[in-house]
Amino acid sequence: MIFGNVDKFAIYVEDINQKLTKVLVYLDGIPIGTEQSQTFLPGFIQSAKFFSQSSELPDFMKNLSDAEKLKLARGDSDLNGSENDILIANEFIVSSWAETFDDFLIMKYKQEQKIIFLWKLIETEGYKFHFTYPSKFINKLHKSTIEQSDIEREVKELLECVEKSNGRSDS
Image (tube, rainbow, N blue to C red; front, side, top):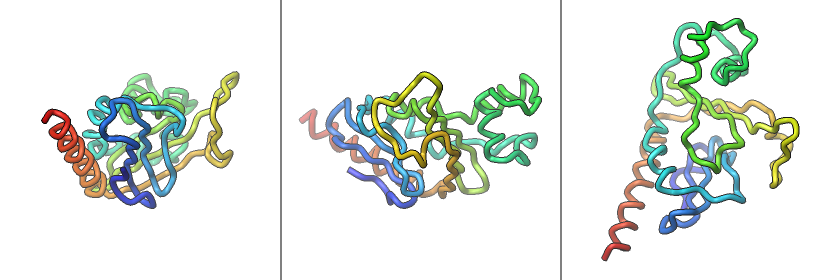
């Protein structure tokens, strides 16, 4: 099932009735997540409730490039950020989306009524993916700007579908 518009923002859940199922999040038409692995759906749903919730960037991050924001948030910046700056920036890293997304470094923050996602697929030295991603995604920074109301609507639709599914299975 697809919740949303895959060209902008959508959540794909292969089987809403299974606890382990394939889950992808589409940002500007690009699927985020490992298509060959499954996600624990109840855990993903708990984190989905917070997709549209984020803070605005602190002043010290606003003038940084997107690449610098992501580096600082990850804690591997050579920007001479203080330890406190790095801790604050790290709060914008998305770490709770589930194991399907563990090959991705994802950061999100609020800007007016939009949620900004900065993300990249990480390939580290000595680690090769056991599946194939197009090379245009690997270690390249992507930015998606999504209306907060679009995210809220699609997450609400997902939650309602899960509730209906759970109600049918209990009958």
